[in-house]
Image (cartoon, rainbow over all chains, first blue to last red; front, side, top):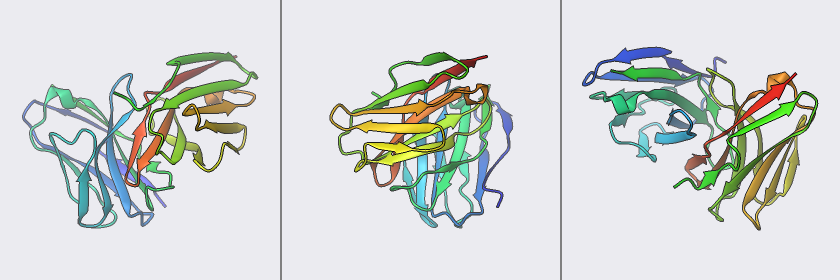
Length: 113
Length: 111
């Protein structure tokens, strides 16, 4: 198993540009989530999904959209990037969340100029 | 504010010593706690977890203690090694769909 994969590893955007951060897992996990990590802070939940076709907002959802058309993929979309979205983004998955640890991807470093 | 936090942002220990990393949580309804290790440039990696019906759980060189009375969680690393240098996060499952992370403690192991 490849586990949780994320692409790209690095990305530089200009303010107002759009892009999609890709996340995929091959462990047949139902639960997937996106976090952002800023310097000196822990991970903050952006959006999550408890299964294909179901998504919900986390702690900091503004400026981000998600969809879950398949069990394997959970892309995160920035429709109009802002400098405040400069961060490291982590995708995670697990069979469930309740009483279950999550497996994290390697992260995507995003710089918005 | 943060409902899961750490008492110390940094911890420096000598190789071979035991390390203790602390975490306070505020939600008494949280029933599942996890410790993660994050090395530079990598994603968080699961270390150990504990459910609220337990007060202690041991793994390989690591022990997690849970004190529900004072809402305190700790991670003990025995015989700390240079490879243990990383940022350690505690996380709590406040409801069935979300994890809340603390800000992290940076552990530095000196040779």
